[in-house]
Image (tube, rainbow, N blue to C red):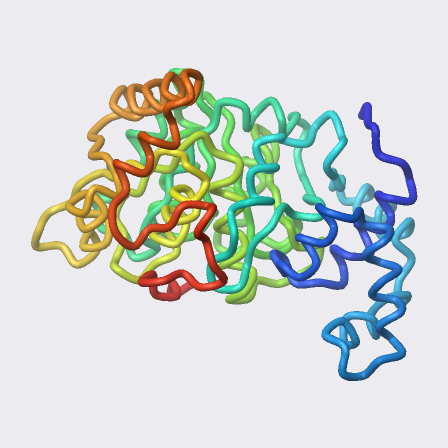
Length: 342
């Protein structure tokens, strides 16, 4: 793996990855601005000040050897990539200036990756397909067909391995003969849910498994919230297939909006509670309506053309009304977006 990262910086990032919660903006923002080594030194100094916000984190530093952590991860087929690595997806840089939702945000200090493919290459043409865990047969059929067709057309499908739409999206991409990326809320060596262990193995063999959390880490609500920004950050755009008003998929859609990337929605029956969230996104103009893979590609192409001509910001701000904030106005709350039930 060619890289411009020195060993000290990588080891500092391993230490931070093992110490902080994913998406802790207090740390991710400082690392982007000052570098991992300086931030690590700053936290080590906080060990002497009990009322310092970094005091609790400082207590965890030095309890493990980061070089040994990398060796143990490599033994499990897991690598740790960081900004500056040839494999690092540069589109994640946009998270530095995208604010926060539910107190999560910033560019990750690093990503743990499982699988033989190159993350930068796979994510270079990727679409997120997300939706309800409690999906209906309609939702799983739409997610499967859409993802299969996107894979057939050469796109990588990104999702979160959850029950329902996520599972259908991954399976659809594999059926289409294409790669897929699973972004997990816990370690890449811990399938969640456990019932998807075999699917996780298949994804690792034909695509990639990615997490901001270190190997062995379990899923938590905070890690689900942080994971959503990685899904949005890796993708050219996000397609929502079934989502209630309060869901992780809607949370991911708002991250996508704040990144000024296209949000698309597959409309559902007006009588279906599972589609109330995505139908509302479409009704409010916060998502374009798509019904097949060609619609998705058209929206991505249109957005890319607008970006190339310098019109993406104007296009986005006229397209997304009301409560969805631009990165310049992003705050540490999600505004009207309720915390997802994940």
